[in-house]
Image (tube, rainbow, N blue to C red; front, side, top):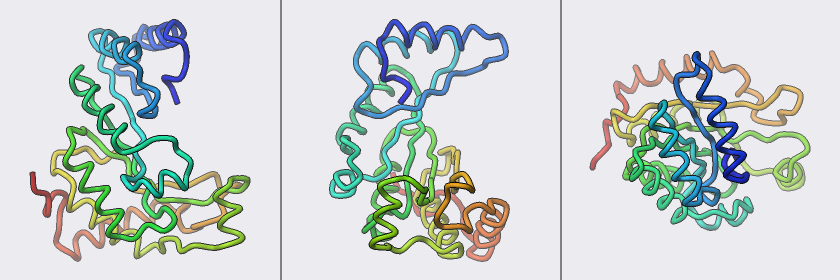
Length: 215
């Protein structure tokens, strides 16, 4: 969470990064509960030097899932953070996790529809994966819950793309963890296969990003 520090420290490290001549923009990943007025004012100030955008974790809009994952954030907090950043001219890239425990496809698509309704510039769609040494891994080992299969995930990604605005930048379509830590799904490590399958299914379905998007 790259805004969870004293403002003096943030100013120093962000300014140092922007001072590098080869740096053309500053991308900051954070949470909606770590964007105080001081931080927002600093980001706006820095954005007058070089482009600044914020990668903001949403993951899901569903309260029960947030509580289960112990995120200490809500969709209302996320929406406010997006509005605050937009009012300062700072683009937002949203992070969404697909396949969270107990979430149905309809619930996940509700999250996508919500993101589509907001002034968000980009999105990272992240496949849920289980890593060794985490609380989620312990839960998965004692009480396994279903995870996406490759073909199922690729089709679902297309369902998501159809609902997203046609001009929204898609920064990520999948994801995987370090091979030494990854428990499941193991197919996620073959990104080339995943991307090729998505491209193939897009053509077969004769569809495109934004096909079902309505303002």
